[in-house]
Image (cartoon, rainbow over all chains, first blue to last red):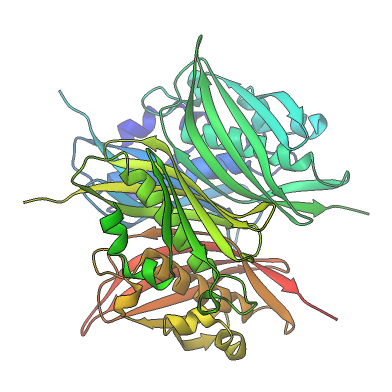
Length: 133
Length: 133
Length: 133
Length: 133
């Protein structure tokens, strides 16, 4: 998984970092960066979506067969608050793991000194792709 | 609108370009860039989503009052094919324009010499925000 | 397909009728019925969703192998206008047909004497299930 | 709220019952009924969606101003398992309550003697409508 993550150039472009990997649970952190903002200086919805989508994809991957790869079939995200703050934490959690399809819930929070605020919630369907000889 | 687009640093980071603006219709183009790829060398789903979301947001803005700004309330995207090819074209179209909420449909296509392939289809709710003194 | 439709008791309960079946395209009609309304006398969102979901499911089924059955994996619907009028027409159209997954777009319109009004737009993922000995 | 629920003919048609109302939280119960099934004898996806949508709508209403009414702007549901069993419990919970828009998460579970199984998860945007003289 860490190897797959390292090959995602876009994750490097946004300085995303895997900060937690457990069975069915992955967290990814994205530091604030002026290059990733929309017109009001907040993280762009596309960056928030990319981070939560990736967290969910890797969470799904933790429960798949070893040789499987994961594709996002579809995702739906509600953006609740502007993504302000110094870093964004994206959490992906598996709700249901099937042979072909995995359903995950994700959320993005911004973390300040004492508190965290949920800025987005996501629901997504992932597909296991069995690559082979 | 072009001024708002120019202030979106993330659109500059992905070299996105407004290529068509009409009432209720906006197209945005994103050239292929290795910095924006996932582990298989295709454009990352987050980049595709960001491009179509922006095309829809600006399409919504064309039908809003002059001083209004636009926020994405939520979006849902189905990723149909890998985003290969030399450039991605994201199209946003308004389906229903209301005083507060606007519903848009978007799609992303990859363009090769003779044909285009739909790689994603999106459905989104946008909100007019009236900023003021 | 017509046999499968006939076995859906809920379609009979809401007096839904298959009015068009073509490759990748199915239309279902639901007459207005006071038993199917919400608190303002319009068709309940659940009834609208059921009709468009079924139209999409059967549209997907037209392109699947003969012995396959179809399941709704997920759907997203935007409700644009109240479902008034004497009958609702639900249209399902296949956007992408794959071996396992099919993506469809649907819409619900209300039909009056001279015009039709779009009351809902839907995007959904369907799955082929191969039942067998 | 109970008065609004009582005026929803469709809720009566499916024998839905309000079983819990608290601030931001509403549960609705639907007994199994052969009239509400799809071709395999499970509750139809449209019925499941209607129940969870209503639970979320009333959950949103608990946090709105007294004279407000609630409309579903959009919803997205993932169907995880067939809705078997003797009764379906639909739970609606408010995630974020705003002046105009409320975002809710919902789930449907089937309840058997000893356990409950999640059969669907839903994410939805509700809108407060201020009706008046």
